[in-house]
Image (cartoon, rainbow, N blue to C red; front, side, top):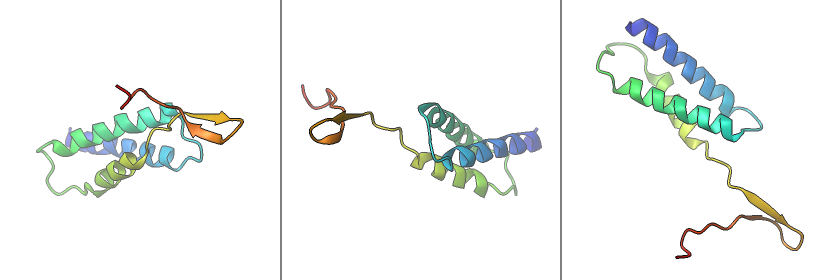
Length: 91
């Protein structure tokens, strides 16, 4: 079971690396990265690891956490591209 979980988790590592290296990251990609990061975090919390190299999991988590969702922008004919205002801080 442990060997299966290790190999399956390496697939999450590979997927995070693949999506993070893409020149165009979509919101779906970001959600996929987020799900796989959470999966790897859960896997690292397990107590059945003994002498396995967990470094790839840790590095993939760090990489995945650096990927931020794209903030929507509006292109104004007067000032160019600007962030879309939100209600946060307005109340």
